[in-house]
Image (cartoon, rainbow, N blue to C red; front, side, top):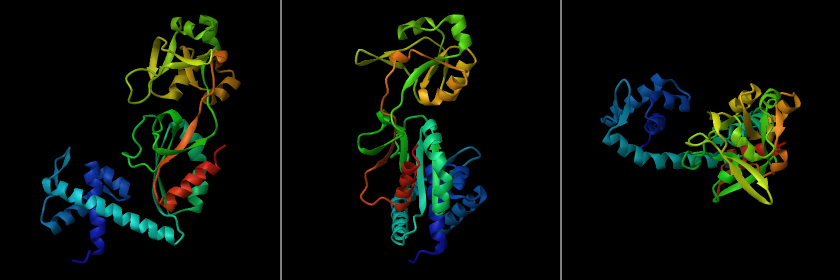
Length: 300
C-alpha cells in the first residue's frame, strides 16, 4: 500500500496528541489549530475503522488500539524525520527543530542575544526553547542542547564552558544593614533574617556555600522567606526584608546602583560556571550544529 500525502500529516498529528494527551498542546507544537488536530485524528480513526482515543470534556486517554499504533509508529516517524533532516543537511540547508533547555539566567545571557542573527541566517531552523531552573534529564525530555552550571550536567554529555567562572555572594540593602548590622562570618547568618531560594522540584532551600582554609562548607540559614525565583530573591533583598545569596553577575548592576551591598566577600571563591552540553552522536543534524556554533560565538 502506497502512503498518501495526507497519511504523514495524520500520523504526525496522532503521535503529537498521543504524547501530550492534549489536543490543544499538540496543536501548538504542530502550528495548527486544535480543531484541525481533532479533525485530522478523526479522519485517521475513520480510515483505520478504530477508535484511537477515549475523549471526555476533561481527559484524553489512548485506547488499546491507539497505544499499539503509537508504539509502532513512533520509531518509524522518527526515522523518517531523521532521513529528511539528513537529506536537507546534504543539500547544505540546515533545517528542522532544535530543542533547548536552559537555566533562566544563562538563557538571558547566552541565548536571547544570538536569536535575531541566528533566525536571519537560518530561517528554516525552528527553535523550541525552555527556560527552567529545574534539573531534569535533557535526553528523556527530548532536548538537543542544554545550558546549565557544570555540577548538574551528566558525565556522558559533551560540555563546553560558556562565560568563565562564577561566584556566589551574600547581599543586603543598606537599610537592612543599618537596622540589623552586617555579618562578620557566615556563621553570623544564623541570627539574621535570610531570603532563601529553593531549586524548583526540591523540597528544601539551596544551601549557602562559602570557602575557608582551602575547603568549601555550607550554611543553611534560617529562612524567613523561601521562593523559587532568583529575581524575587533579589527584589526582596532590595526591599530590606533580609540577606540574600546570589550569583554575583546577577547583582552587579544593583550593587553599582547602591540598591544592594555585598557581604562576606572574603569567604567566597569562584567556581566553574555555565556549560553548553549535548549528547554524543555520530551524525549531529546540521540545525543543531549551527545553533551550538551561534551560542558559542556569541558568548561574551
